[in-house]
Length: 100
Image (cartoon, rainbow, N blue to C red; front, top):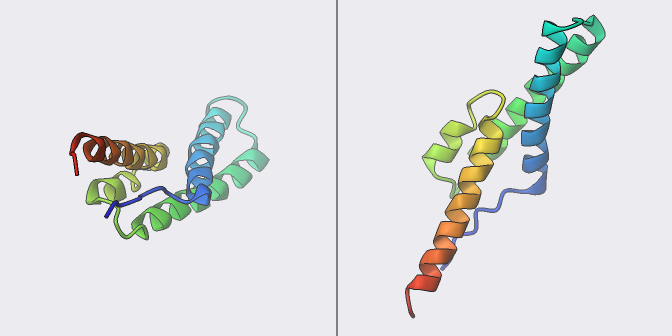
């Protein structure tokens, strides 16, 4: 039996939104520091971060390393998704290498 750990598409969107909102927020802080941008990007980043963490922890067969990586603010969601994808490709290579 193969384990498919493909994350749902909305988890990928949230991981990208987490990183993009962090980059926009930090760029704003270190350049013009517009308050409307800060008030929009702060909650956006926070919601995306929480969505990634909760969504990753709800993946039942995800390894503990993936769940811990999701806790890293900013790039943790994308790193967790990358580790999940690597696990899928490693499993498929093992299945191809082992004759049945």
